[in-house]
Length: 461
Image 1 (tube, rainbow, N blue to C red):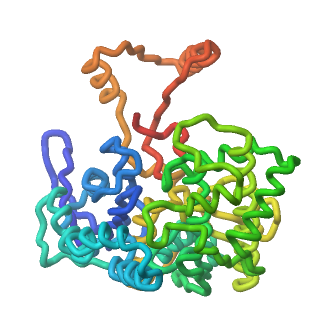
Image 2 (image 1 turned 135 degrees about the vertical axis):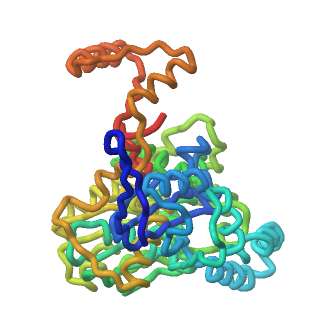
C-alpha cells in the first residue's frame, strides 16, 4: 500500500511516496466502552474511546468519531485498510444467549422477549450494521472491505501480550463474559498466542463482582471501581467482614484450587433476568436490602464490599498460580475488566508468583479494539512479533488526540474564558501549587490523550 504525501519545500512542491505496509483498524462496539485503534505494520499508531468525543460515559455506540481520529492520525482512508477487525464473534454470543434461555426455561421469558428483537434486527446482521456505520466515517468501497472477528477473550489476551515487553508470557484474562468464556489462561510465545484453559458462562468472577456492585447500589459495568474504592472502608478485623465472607463462600461461590469458580445460580438473576441478583434471597443472606443508588452508605455496605474484594483477590491469585503452573513462565500479562482491579493486582504482585507483570492500561472492552487488530496481524496474517526492548509498546498509553497551544487559546476565546500564557514552567508550577493549596480543583492535560480509564493528565477535557 502506498500513500502520497505532499511536502512543502519552500516555493516548490514535491510528492513523496512512503510505503506504509499493513494497516488494520480494530473496533469494539455495541456493548459498552466502544473504541477504535489503528496499527500499521504491527505498531500501535492511534487508539481512543468514543466516550472522549461524544461525552457519553461508556458510550456503547459504533465509534464513529474515534475511528475518524485514528484514521486521520494515521493518514489513512478506509479503502487503504487491509482489514477491519471486530473484537468478538457476535454469532457465537447469540448461540450462548439461545442456549442459556433454553437451559433456564421457562425462566427469563421477559428478558428473552426484550433481547431477541434487537438481536434479530441488528446484531444478527452485524457486518451490514458495521458497514452502514462506517459510511458515517467516510466514503469507501464496501466490496473491498475485509472484516475479521476474533473471539472476545482472544482480543483481550492479544491486547495484553503483544504490546508487552516479554518474548514469552502467561496471559490471564478475566471479565464478565465474552461469547462463552469468562476467564482464560493463554501462553504467548513470539507471534503465537495459545489458549490453554477457559472458564465458561454462567460462572464468572467478573459477574460475581458486578452482582455485588449492583447490590451495593452502584451501576453495573461502570461502578465496579466504586466498589473497589468502598472496600477499604470496611473493618477487616470486624465480625461483619468475616461473617459476610463465610456467607459468600458457603452460599454463592465455590472456589476450586485452580481458581475456577462455580456460582450458585439460585441466588443470581443475570443469566436470563433483568437484574444481577435474586434480591430477596440476598437480603436473607446478608441481613439488609439492596441499596438504592445514591442513598447513604453505611458501615455494613463497606464491610460487604471488603468481603467480596477479599474473595476476588483470592480467586485472582489462584488463577495466576494456575497460569504459572501451566506455562512455567516468569512473566504475566493481564487484561479483561477484572484486571482494572488495581488492589487485586497489587496483592498478586506482592505474592511473587511472577517476576514480571504487565497490565494492559485499557484492560476493559475498549482495549478489545487494540487486541483485535493485533490478533489479526500476528495470528490471522502470521506476521512476526518484534520485541523492541522498550518498557512496552503502548507509548505510555498516549495514543489519543492532542491540542496545540493555539487550539487551547482559541477555545478559551470562544467561551470568553480567562487565560494566562506562561513562558516559564517554574512560574506556572508555583501558581498551580497555590491554587491547589487554596482547596481548589485543577484540571490538567498535556500531550496526547491516554487510552484507558486511568487517565492521569494526558486527557482532553
